[in-house]
Length: 179
Length: 168
Picture 1 (cartoon, rainbow over the protein chains, first blue to last red):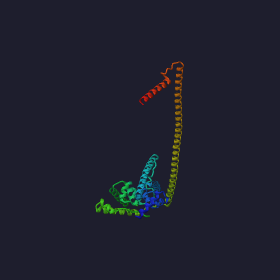
Picture 2: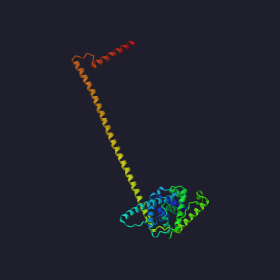
Picture 3: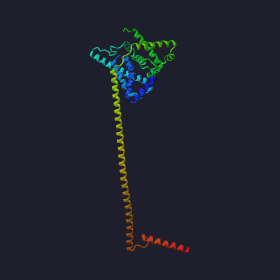
Picture 4: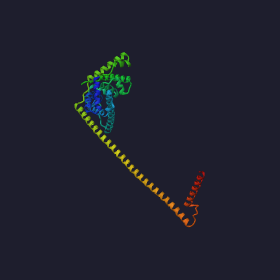
Protein backbone atom coordinates (compact mmCIF):
# COMPACT_ATOMS: atom_id res chain seq x y z
CA UNK A 1 0.00 0.00 0.00
CA UNK A 2 2.84 2.34 0.98
CA UNK A 3 4.66 1.41 -2.18
CA UNK A 4 1.58 2.32 -4.24
CA UNK A 5 1.28 5.66 -2.45
CA UNK A 6 4.94 6.30 -3.09
CA UNK A 7 4.52 5.56 -6.79
CA UNK A 8 1.55 7.94 -6.96
CA UNK A 9 3.62 10.69 -5.38
CA UNK A 10 6.50 10.08 -7.80
CA UNK A 11 4.17 10.12 -10.79
CA UNK A 12 2.59 13.37 -9.63
CA UNK A 13 6.05 14.92 -9.35
CA UNK A 14 6.82 13.77 -12.90
CA UNK A 15 3.55 15.22 -14.16
CA UNK A 16 4.70 18.57 -12.80
CA UNK A 17 7.86 18.19 -14.89
CA UNK A 18 10.23 17.75 -11.93
CA UNK A 19 13.51 16.03 -12.93
CA UNK A 20 13.85 14.45 -9.46
CA UNK A 21 10.54 12.66 -10.04
CA UNK A 22 11.85 11.07 -13.21
CA UNK A 23 15.08 10.19 -11.48
CA UNK A 24 13.15 8.30 -8.80
CA UNK A 25 11.04 6.64 -11.45
CA UNK A 26 14.15 5.37 -13.23
CA UNK A 27 15.61 4.07 -9.98
CA UNK A 28 12.38 2.24 -9.12
CA UNK A 29 11.51 0.73 -12.48
CA UNK A 30 14.67 0.34 -14.58
CA UNK A 31 15.53 -3.19 -13.34
CA UNK A 32 12.08 -4.58 -14.06
CA UNK A 33 11.83 -2.88 -17.42
CA UNK A 34 15.33 -3.90 -18.44
CA UNK A 35 14.47 -7.49 -17.43
CA UNK A 36 11.31 -7.32 -19.50
CA UNK A 37 13.17 -6.13 -22.61
CA UNK A 38 16.15 -8.41 -22.08
CA UNK A 39 14.01 -11.55 -21.79
CA UNK A 40 12.26 -10.69 -25.03
CA UNK A 41 15.18 -9.44 -27.11
CA UNK A 42 18.00 -11.54 -25.66
CA UNK A 43 20.28 -8.62 -26.34
CA UNK A 44 21.69 -6.13 -23.84
CA UNK A 45 22.30 -3.33 -26.32
CA UNK A 46 18.78 -3.51 -27.70
CA UNK A 47 17.41 -3.65 -24.14
CA UNK A 48 19.40 -0.55 -23.17
CA UNK A 49 18.14 1.26 -26.24
CA UNK A 50 14.54 0.22 -25.62
CA UNK A 51 14.79 1.23 -21.97
CA UNK A 52 16.09 4.66 -22.91
CA UNK A 53 13.41 5.09 -25.57
CA UNK A 54 10.72 4.01 -23.13
CA UNK A 55 11.69 6.54 -20.48
CA UNK A 56 11.79 9.34 -23.06
CA UNK A 57 8.30 8.30 -24.14
CA UNK A 58 7.22 8.33 -20.49
CA UNK A 59 8.46 11.93 -20.17
CA UNK A 60 6.47 12.86 -23.24
CA UNK A 61 3.21 11.10 -22.31
CA UNK A 62 3.09 10.99 -18.52
CA UNK A 63 0.43 13.70 -18.50
CA UNK A 64 -2.03 11.22 -20.02
CA UNK A 65 -1.67 8.54 -17.33
CA UNK A 66 -3.58 8.16 -14.07
CA UNK A 67 -1.10 7.86 -11.20
CA UNK A 68 -3.24 5.08 -9.62
CA UNK A 69 -2.78 2.80 -12.61
CA UNK A 70 0.75 3.82 -13.49
CA UNK A 71 2.24 0.29 -13.55
CA UNK A 72 -0.34 -0.94 -16.05
CA UNK A 73 0.16 2.17 -18.20
CA UNK A 74 3.95 1.81 -18.07
CA UNK A 75 3.99 -1.84 -19.11
CA UNK A 76 1.40 -1.21 -21.81
CA UNK A 77 3.71 1.49 -23.19
CA UNK A 78 6.66 -0.91 -22.92
CA UNK A 79 4.66 -3.58 -24.72
CA UNK A 80 3.77 -1.19 -27.55
CA UNK A 81 7.39 -0.17 -27.85
CA UNK A 82 8.47 -3.80 -28.03
CA UNK A 83 5.87 -4.44 -30.75
CA UNK A 84 7.37 -1.54 -32.75
CA UNK A 85 10.84 -2.99 -32.19
CA UNK A 86 9.73 -6.40 -33.50
CA UNK A 87 8.17 -4.83 -36.60
CA UNK A 88 11.34 -2.84 -37.31
CA UNK A 89 13.48 -5.93 -36.74
CA UNK A 90 11.37 -7.99 -39.16
CA UNK A 91 11.72 -5.29 -41.79
CA UNK A 92 15.47 -5.18 -41.21
CA UNK A 93 15.77 -8.97 -41.45
CA UNK A 94 13.75 -9.02 -44.65
CA UNK A 95 15.99 -6.38 -46.15
CA UNK A 96 19.13 -8.22 -45.03
CA UNK A 97 17.79 -11.47 -46.51
CA UNK A 98 17.26 -9.75 -49.84
CA UNK A 99 20.73 -8.26 -49.82
CA UNK A 100 22.21 -11.66 -48.84
CA UNK A 101 20.40 -13.35 -51.72
CA UNK A 102 21.66 -10.73 -54.11
CA UNK A 103 25.23 -11.03 -52.89
CA UNK A 104 24.97 -14.83 -52.59
CA UNK A 105 26.53 -14.71 -49.19
CA UNK A 106 25.40 -16.10 -45.91
CA UNK A 107 24.02 -13.82 -43.26
CA UNK A 108 23.31 -14.68 -39.73
CA UNK A 109 20.12 -13.72 -38.07
CA UNK A 110 20.68 -11.31 -35.22
CA UNK A 111 18.10 -13.11 -33.11
CA UNK A 112 19.48 -13.87 -29.64
CA UNK A 113 22.92 -12.75 -30.67
CA UNK A 114 24.16 -11.98 -27.20
CA UNK A 115 26.64 -14.71 -26.25
CA UNK A 116 25.93 -14.14 -22.60
CA UNK A 117 22.22 -14.86 -22.98
CA UNK A 118 21.07 -17.28 -20.30
CA UNK A 119 19.20 -20.50 -20.79
CA UNK A 120 15.83 -19.08 -19.79
CA UNK A 121 16.08 -16.18 -22.24
CA UNK A 122 17.06 -18.54 -25.07
CA UNK A 123 14.10 -20.80 -24.39
CA UNK A 124 11.75 -17.85 -24.13
CA UNK A 125 12.91 -16.84 -27.59
CA UNK A 126 11.83 -20.22 -28.90
CA UNK A 127 8.22 -19.53 -27.91
CA UNK A 128 6.04 -17.52 -30.25
CA UNK A 129 6.30 -13.78 -29.67
CA UNK A 130 2.89 -13.29 -28.09
CA UNK A 131 3.30 -16.14 -25.61
CA UNK A 132 6.77 -15.02 -24.58
CA UNK A 133 5.54 -11.46 -24.15
CA UNK A 134 2.59 -12.39 -21.93
CA UNK A 135 4.78 -14.57 -19.69
CA UNK A 136 7.46 -11.94 -19.35
CA UNK A 137 5.10 -9.01 -18.82
CA UNK A 138 3.22 -10.96 -16.16
CA UNK A 139 6.41 -11.68 -14.28
CA UNK A 140 8.14 -8.30 -14.52
CA UNK A 141 5.17 -5.96 -14.30
CA UNK A 142 3.76 -7.48 -11.14
CA UNK A 143 0.30 -6.77 -12.55
CA UNK A 144 -2.67 -8.89 -11.54
CA UNK A 145 -4.32 -11.08 -14.18
CA UNK A 146 -7.22 -8.63 -14.26
CA UNK A 147 -4.90 -5.74 -15.04
CA UNK A 148 -3.01 -7.87 -17.53
CA UNK A 149 -6.23 -8.80 -19.32
CA UNK A 150 -7.22 -5.15 -19.40
CA UNK A 151 -4.00 -3.88 -20.97
CA UNK A 152 -4.12 -6.70 -23.51
CA UNK A 153 -7.81 -6.10 -24.29
CA UNK A 154 -8.75 -9.73 -23.80
CA UNK A 155 -11.08 -11.63 -21.47
CA UNK A 156 -9.64 -12.65 -18.10
CA UNK A 157 -10.08 -16.39 -18.78
CA UNK A 158 -8.27 -16.15 -22.13
CA UNK A 159 -5.38 -14.30 -20.55
CA UNK A 160 -5.13 -16.82 -17.72
CA UNK A 161 -5.14 -19.78 -20.07
CA UNK A 162 -2.56 -18.20 -22.43
CA UNK A 163 -0.16 -17.63 -19.55
CA UNK A 164 -0.68 -21.16 -18.26
CA UNK A 165 -0.15 -22.81 -21.65
CA UNK A 166 2.90 -20.64 -22.27
CA UNK A 167 4.46 -21.50 -18.92
CA UNK A 168 3.89 -25.22 -19.48
CA UNK A 169 5.56 -24.98 -22.87
CA UNK A 170 8.45 -23.02 -21.40
CA UNK A 171 8.98 -25.60 -18.69
CA UNK A 172 9.05 -28.40 -21.30
CA UNK A 173 11.59 -26.46 -23.36
CA UNK A 174 13.75 -25.87 -20.30
CA UNK A 175 13.64 -29.55 -19.38
CA UNK A 176 14.45 -30.75 -22.89
CA UNK A 177 17.24 -28.37 -23.79
CA UNK A 178 20.84 -29.59 -23.65
CA UNK A 179 22.40 -26.53 -21.96
CA UNK B 1 19.49 -9.33 -8.51
CA UNK B 2 15.95 -8.95 -7.28
CA UNK B 3 13.26 -10.73 -9.19
CA UNK B 4 9.60 -9.85 -9.05
CA UNK B 5 6.49 -11.68 -7.99
CA UNK B 6 2.94 -10.80 -8.86
CA UNK B 7 1.65 -8.99 -5.86
CA UNK B 8 -1.89 -8.11 -6.74
CA UNK B 9 -3.46 -11.48 -7.41
CA UNK B 10 -5.77 -13.50 -5.28
CA UNK B 11 -4.84 -16.45 -7.45
CA UNK B 12 -6.89 -19.09 -5.58
CA UNK B 13 -10.17 -17.23 -6.03
CA UNK B 14 -9.33 -16.37 -9.60
CA UNK B 15 -8.57 -19.99 -10.58
CA UNK B 16 -11.70 -21.22 -8.84
CA UNK B 17 -13.76 -19.09 -11.20
CA UNK B 18 -12.42 -20.81 -14.30
CA UNK B 19 -11.17 -24.28 -13.31
CA UNK B 20 -12.08 -27.30 -11.20
CA UNK B 21 -10.25 -27.58 -7.82
CA UNK B 22 -7.82 -30.19 -9.22
CA UNK B 23 -7.03 -28.15 -12.32
CA UNK B 24 -6.69 -25.03 -10.22
CA UNK B 25 -4.18 -26.73 -7.95
CA UNK B 26 -2.16 -27.95 -10.96
CA UNK B 27 -2.12 -24.49 -12.54
CA UNK B 28 -1.04 -22.92 -9.28
CA UNK B 29 1.88 -25.36 -9.12
CA UNK B 30 2.81 -24.53 -12.73
CA UNK B 31 2.81 -20.82 -11.98
CA UNK B 32 4.99 -21.34 -8.92
CA UNK B 33 7.52 -23.45 -10.83
CA UNK B 34 7.67 -20.83 -13.60
CA UNK B 35 8.35 -18.12 -11.03
CA UNK B 36 11.06 -20.34 -9.60
CA UNK B 37 12.62 -20.57 -13.07
CA UNK B 38 12.77 -16.78 -13.33
CA UNK B 39 14.39 -16.63 -9.90
CA UNK B 40 16.90 -19.31 -10.83
CA UNK B 41 17.93 -17.39 -13.96
CA UNK B 42 17.81 -13.75 -12.97
CA UNK B 43 18.02 -11.18 -15.72
CA UNK B 44 20.93 -8.74 -15.68
CA UNK B 45 20.55 -5.15 -14.53
CA UNK B 46 21.01 -2.18 -16.80
CA UNK B 47 24.44 -0.61 -16.42
CA UNK B 48 24.82 2.49 -14.25
CA UNK B 49 26.16 4.30 -17.31
CA UNK B 50 22.93 3.58 -19.21
CA UNK B 51 20.84 4.91 -16.34
CA UNK B 52 22.98 8.04 -16.05
CA UNK B 53 22.62 8.61 -19.82
CA UNK B 54 18.85 8.23 -19.60
CA UNK B 55 18.64 10.71 -16.72
CA UNK B 56 20.76 13.17 -18.66
CA UNK B 57 18.59 12.81 -21.78
CA UNK B 58 15.45 13.34 -19.69
CA UNK B 59 16.92 16.46 -18.06
CA UNK B 60 17.70 17.84 -21.53
CA UNK B 61 14.21 16.98 -22.77
CA UNK B 62 12.60 18.72 -19.79
CA UNK B 63 14.82 21.76 -20.30
CA UNK B 64 13.85 21.90 -23.98
CA UNK B 65 10.22 21.56 -23.11
CA UNK B 66 10.47 24.44 -20.63
CA UNK B 67 12.23 26.60 -23.20
CA UNK B 68 9.64 25.65 -25.81
CA UNK B 69 6.81 26.57 -23.48
CA UNK B 70 8.37 30.01 -22.85
CA UNK B 71 8.78 30.50 -26.59
CA UNK B 72 5.18 29.45 -27.09
CA UNK B 73 4.01 31.97 -24.46
CA UNK B 74 6.07 34.69 -26.13
CA UNK B 75 4.71 33.86 -29.59
CA UNK B 76 1.14 33.77 -28.29
CA UNK B 77 1.57 37.13 -26.53
CA UNK B 78 3.07 38.68 -29.65
CA UNK B 79 0.22 37.32 -31.76
CA UNK B 80 -2.42 38.71 -29.37
CA UNK B 81 -0.65 42.10 -29.28
CA UNK B 82 -0.51 42.18 -33.09
CA UNK B 83 -4.23 41.39 -33.30
CA UNK B 84 -5.05 44.14 -30.77
CA UNK B 85 -2.96 46.66 -32.74
CA UNK B 86 -4.64 45.68 -36.02
CA UNK B 87 -8.13 45.90 -34.53
CA UNK B 88 -7.48 49.29 -32.93
CA UNK B 89 -6.01 50.68 -36.16
CA UNK B 90 -9.02 49.50 -38.10
CA UNK B 91 -11.36 51.02 -35.51
CA UNK B 92 -9.43 54.30 -35.55
CA UNK B 93 -9.55 54.43 -39.34
CA UNK B 94 -13.29 53.77 -39.32
CA UNK B 95 -13.85 56.44 -36.71
CA UNK B 96 -11.92 59.03 -38.76
CA UNK B 97 -13.78 58.06 -41.90
CA UNK B 98 -17.11 58.36 -40.09
CA UNK B 99 -16.16 61.81 -38.75
CA UNK B 100 -15.22 63.11 -42.16
CA UNK B 101 -18.38 61.64 -43.66
CA UNK B 102 -20.50 63.42 -41.04
CA UNK B 103 -18.69 66.64 -41.75
CA UNK B 104 -19.29 66.24 -45.46
CA UNK B 105 -22.95 65.49 -44.80
CA UNK B 106 -23.28 68.67 -42.70
CA UNK B 107 -21.66 70.70 -45.39
CA UNK B 108 -23.92 69.17 -47.97
CA UNK B 109 -26.97 69.92 -45.83
CA UNK B 110 -25.85 73.50 -45.34
CA UNK B 111 -25.28 74.05 -49.00
CA UNK B 112 -28.61 72.42 -49.78
CA UNK B 113 -30.36 74.70 -47.32
CA UNK B 114 -28.50 77.65 -48.72
CA UNK B 115 -29.40 76.70 -52.24
CA UNK B 116 -33.08 76.17 -51.27
CA UNK B 117 -33.24 79.54 -49.53
CA UNK B 118 -31.59 81.29 -52.43
CA UNK B 119 -33.91 79.69 -54.91
CA UNK B 120 -36.93 80.78 -52.79
CA UNK B 121 -35.62 84.33 -52.73
CA UNK B 122 -34.97 84.16 -56.46
CA UNK B 123 -38.53 83.02 -57.07
CA UNK B 124 -40.00 85.81 -54.92
CA UNK B 125 -37.80 88.45 -56.57
CA UNK B 126 -38.83 87.10 -59.96
CA UNK B 127 -42.53 87.30 -58.95
CA UNK B 128 -42.14 90.84 -57.67
CA UNK B 129 -40.37 91.83 -60.90
CA UNK B 130 -43.20 90.34 -62.92
CA UNK B 131 -45.83 92.22 -60.89
CA UNK B 132 -43.88 95.46 -61.13
CA UNK B 133 -43.65 94.96 -64.87
CA UNK B 134 -47.40 94.24 -65.01
CA UNK B 135 -48.15 97.47 -63.05
CA UNK B 136 -45.89 99.43 -65.34
CA UNK B 137 -47.66 97.99 -68.34
CA UNK B 138 -51.03 98.72 -66.72
CA UNK B 139 -51.96 94.99 -66.57
CA UNK B 140 -52.37 94.88 -62.78
CA UNK B 141 -56.06 95.02 -62.01
CA UNK B 142 -56.17 93.41 -58.62
CA UNK B 143 -57.14 89.96 -59.91
CA UNK B 144 -53.67 88.33 -59.81
CA UNK B 145 -50.26 88.58 -58.03
CA UNK B 146 -49.42 89.76 -54.50
CA UNK B 147 -51.70 92.83 -54.72
CA UNK B 148 -54.75 90.76 -55.52
CA UNK B 149 -54.04 88.52 -52.52
CA UNK B 150 -53.82 91.55 -50.24
CA UNK B 151 -57.05 93.01 -51.62
CA UNK B 152 -58.86 89.71 -51.07
CA UNK B 153 -57.52 89.48 -47.51
CA UNK B 154 -58.69 93.07 -46.78
CA UNK B 155 -62.18 92.38 -48.15
CA UNK B 156 -62.51 89.29 -45.97
CA UNK B 157 -61.47 91.27 -42.89
CA UNK B 158 -64.08 93.97 -43.64
CA UNK B 159 -66.85 91.36 -44.04
CA UNK B 160 -65.82 89.72 -40.77
CA UNK B 161 -65.77 93.07 -38.92
CA UNK B 162 -69.23 93.97 -40.24
CA UNK B 163 -70.66 90.66 -39.14
CA UNK B 164 -69.23 91.00 -35.67
CA UNK B 165 -70.55 94.62 -35.43
CA UNK B 166 -74.14 93.69 -36.31
CA UNK B 167 -74.13 90.67 -34.06
CA UNK B 168 -73.06 92.94 -31.17
